[in-house]
Amino acid sequence: MPAFFDRDLLDALSTAAAGSPRLRSHRNLHASMDEPVQRLLIGIEPGSYVMPHRHLTPGYDETLLILRGSVGVLVFDDAGHVEHCVRLDAGGSTTGYHLPCNTWHSICALQAGTICFEVKLGPYRPLVDAERATWAPTEGSEGVTSYLAGLQAHFAA
Image (cartoon, rainbow, N blue to C red; front, side):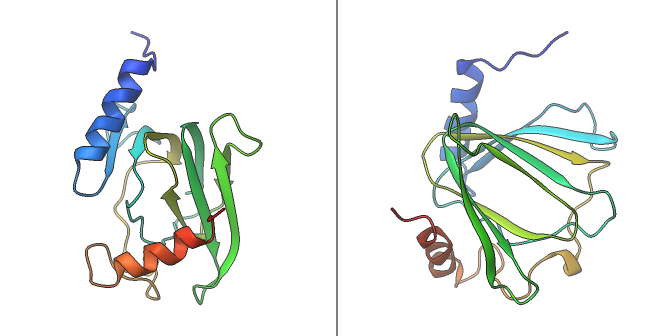
């Protein structure tokens, strides 16, 4: 059965993200976490913290397209300095990215109701310690609010 991404689905994903403590919501398009390709829709709201991370497994590149709204993408060097920051806007001049594995990165939602489409190699595996940035606060820790504000400042008009 085909799956269609209509306004009702995107609205429901946005509503779920806005009501989530992490301000994010996922809709997996793959039937199992063991599938060789992981495809998902992500609703993300401003204030959601995506800890800088990388994927070390060869071939675990990440592709992200913005379907609705806007995100800021940050790419870091090994010491946590921002090397690139790019705004992605649905329907804008830059609408997505493809990041090779071993690239430190994070995103921050810049607009309420943002929806992304992400594709990664599977099977799903949680991040290991070496894939989490030691120079950034962990999700839920005391320094997240000020760190996230610093990330978002890269995209202030």
